[in-house]
Length: 105
Image (cartoon, rainbow, N blue to C red):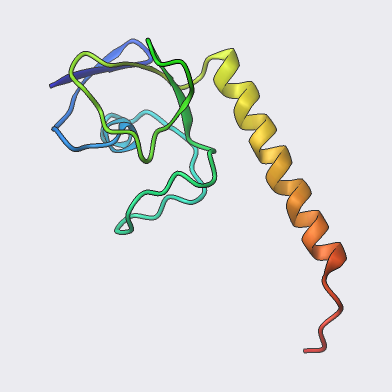
């Protein structure tokens, strides 16, 4: 099947995720929670992409490709959302560090 990512037509196999197809075609999508060999969970939301016709952004690590899918990895919407997600993750880490008691090592 064919999938288009950022205007590049990519060959894909049924069952592959957007992330797998992008990696196979040299297209970078940032990830945090994705680990090869483990089932995709899409928890970190760093790999969000825009899919033409979809109302919401999709986690590339968990979203399966479909024939004729048009994917965009670097739109303004995607980049702003990723930035927000990273800011939220960092703010949570700061809170965890501040709220944990000091542990002797």
